Amino acid sequence: MSDRSLPFAAHPRVCTQDVDEAQARVGEVLGRYELRPVEPGAHIDACMTGIEFDGIGLYCLGYGAAVSIIPQMIDRHLLVSLPLAGVAEVSHGSERITSTPELASVLSLTRPMSVRWSAGHCGLFTRFDRGALENQLGRLLGRRPDRPLAFSLGMDLTRPPARSWRSVAELLRNEAETGGGMLEQPLVVRQLEGLLMTQLLIAQPSNYSDALCGGQRRVAPPTVRRAVSLIEEHADEPLTVEDIAEAVGVSARALQEGFRRHLEKTPMGYLREVRLDRARAELAVTDPVAATVTDVAYRWGFAHLGRFSLAYRQRFGESPSDTLRR
Image 1 (cartoon, helix red, strand yellow):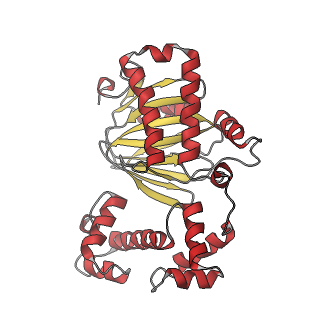
Image 2 (image 1 turned 60 degrees about the vertical axis):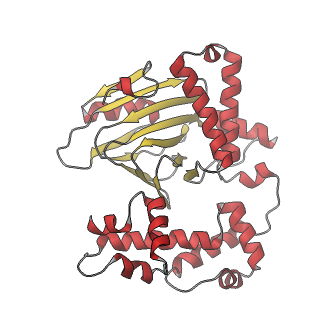
Image 3 (image 1 turned 135 degrees about the vertical axis):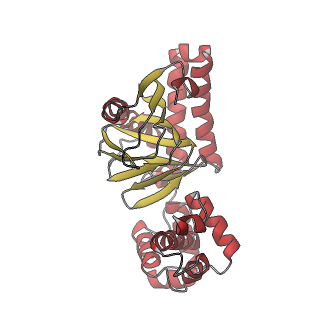
């Protein structure tokens, strides 16, 4: 891989085929981490480019080969990671996603995490200084934040608020790549930094989303958590919104409201995601001779195989049969 083919090509940072050197030099920018090729003996071709401002940095990074990454927990900054090519399987605390060019990962870096990049993966990173971002949060709230800021993992870039955030990031990227005069004006840069931070705070669910929206919770987070636990414990059983709402002691409408406000999805949408995750886990360890994709899909409540395959590919970046064969 040549850094001349990456975004920010005029701003090279790292170019090496040595794992230890890549680990050390990339770690100086994005935070210390453990880097290992997925295939024993495989060679990497690490290249990173990027630019930095006062409170944010924009970088592009690729390793050329499939790699496993285990970052150390830090509280100095946060990252938004967007694949430009390939996919990344990301585990962050209890959350897990397969990140694609339409699904970025927002890494608060205060929980244990692991990442696995596919071969040919190339990622665009936006690094936010945590202090600067929490100062911006305080300005929006009109008070000092009383707990560390933490975001949900997946950022759906097909949603309008997230698309707006990406547009600001792309503006900064284009200015850096074309040598536009905008970045030579400190006042303009500060305004763009502030806009990028504000748009992230508004677009991405976090533990401050309710306060930023100024709304009152109709279903308290503990109720939503109880509903989530019930769904995860009984995902293999027939469940309706009414069943879940009755079990946690609220109305179906209030439950829908709570899930939309705190998880940005419906209870049945969350149930579908849990069932997809369970189906994938089963497919990954199932002998193709002993069971079929149809068997597993039916076992997890997916009666329409075409819709199951489409939802599976959208979530994991591959077909159910690909997982089963691998």
